[in-house]
Length: 304
Ligand SMILES: [Fe+2]
Image 1 (tube, rainbow, N blue to C red):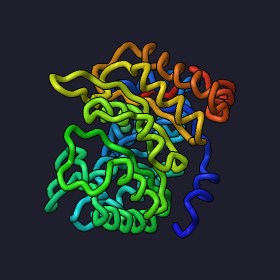
Image 2 (image 1 turned 90 degrees about the horizontal axis):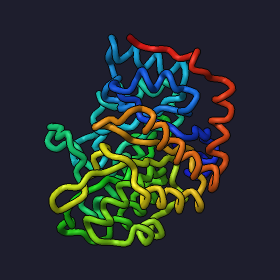
Image 3 (image 1 turned 180 degrees about the vertical axis):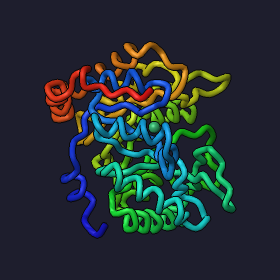
Image 4 (image 1 turned 30 degrees about the vertical axis):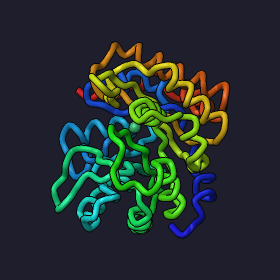
C-alpha cells in the first residue's frame, strides 16, 4: 500500500447505505435487498468456516457488496501481529472481494489471550508510533485499505499525553490510513466524558472518513452505553448530517446488534439515513436508485 491515502480513497467505490448482516435478521435482510445497498459482516464469524455461516455469506454475496468489520485485529496490542488471523482474514477478503476492511482503534489481546472487549489504548506518542507501524504492515500484507473505527470508552484514561481526538488523528496521519467514523461512539463519549462532539469532529482529520456507523445506545446507572440495542437518537443523526455536509464518504451503515425491533423499524432508520444523505451527499443515494431497478424481493435468496 505505497499509494497516498487520498488517491486510494478517491478510487474506492461508493457503497451507499448498508446494514450489518446478523443471523437473527438474515431472512428479512435478504428479502429487502432492494432497500439495502450493502452489508457489513463480522469476519471472525466467517473465517475458515463452512456450514450455515458459509451458506449465509454466499447468499449475501449474490445480492450485496460485502465489507468486513473485525474485532480481533488488536492493532494496538503489544503482542506480535497474529499471522494466522491475518492469513484467514486475507482469504475471506479475497473471497468476498471487499474494497476495504475495518477494525477498531483499540486492543483486544494481551499475552496471547483475547478479551472479547474493545479496550482503549494509552493516548501517547509512543503508542501512535507503535500502532502506525502495525497498520502499515497489516495493509501491506492484506493488500487492501484498512480503516479504523473510533471506539466508545467509559473513563478518562490515565497517562494520556494527548486528547483522544489528537490520538486518533495522529494515528491515521502517521499510518496514512482511513477512518471508520462511528457518530454514536462520538456522542456516547461526549456525554460520558463531558466534551462537545462537534469540537471533537472539528479536531480529527474528517476527510479521512471512508465509512460511517450510525447506532443507538442505552442508559446505564451513571453512563450511557454503546449497546447497538436501541433506536438511533436525533443528536446522532445530527452528527451524521454534520459530517456528510463536510466530507465525501463512501458508505454509511446502521448497526443493530441486539434487542431487535420489527424489521420495518430498521428499514425506517435506513430511510432516515438515506434522506439525510439525499440532502447532503446525493452520491450516496445513487446506489439505491440503481438497486431498486436491479433487485426486487423476487430475487431474494433465503437461507433456511
Ligand atoms: Fe461502530
